[in-house]
Amino acid sequence: MIDKAIQAITEPRRRDILHLVRKGELTSSAIASHFDVSAPAISQHLKILEEAGLVVVRRAGTKRFYGIRREGFVELMQYIESFWDDSLLRLKEAAEEEERKRHESN
Image (tube, rainbow, N blue to C red; front, side, top):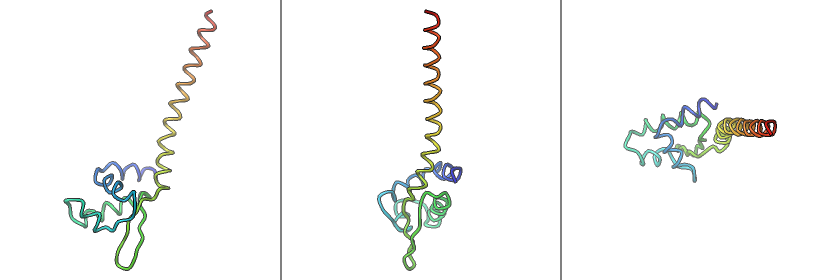
């Protein structure tokens, strides 16, 4: 799912869509009204975001409401933070090694 999420957010329009729905649900037509592309094009972006686990769809009659799926972002953040944690660990180990070398030379 992480690969799909990363791939989904590489497209600028999809990131814009995520910004639109982050505060609450919007219909696909309300989302489409913010863009200068066709409604089917926006529907395709929404489908990709849904398949990536970043948005959820709620159906009410003939309307579809799209909203943020926060769990999808938690998974994405954990993945990204794993790289940050590794970098911090390597920095800590390098600092400790440098400190050990200074103590040995004294």
